[in-house]
Image (cartoon, rainbow, N blue to C red):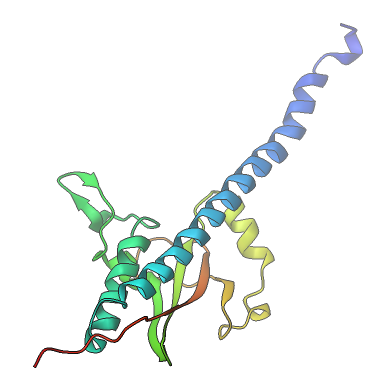
Length: 180
């Protein structure tokens, strides 16, 4: 190695390593977002499906329970500790606080479920970059889709949240009547 090249590998590493770490963390956060999007979509489907076998007055309650059972896998918090083990808990405060809107509507024979869920962006550096490059004003809150929020949702997490807005409609093949 020539005398004037000493330290060049160290300098190259110092320049490239932060970019490489940011790239890896960004890829992990995007994969996390993709999985979360699928889970929220499935929660809306499970909620709509759970309305099928129940009477009309119990539909919203059963649908919300079904959605919370799915969504609890996306957030874990100290209030979901059971015997020292952190387990998904559909009744946990963090799940209920992040379920921002939940509606069950009848549309003819279709049961339509609409939900909004605040998903925390947790990857260091990547979450802040994603959160700072999205303008919440660019996204309308009335349409299904996603937007970024920097609000807190009832727990200690203060980073940005991605708000997923999902709608699912399933035709009800029959009507359940109450017993007389």
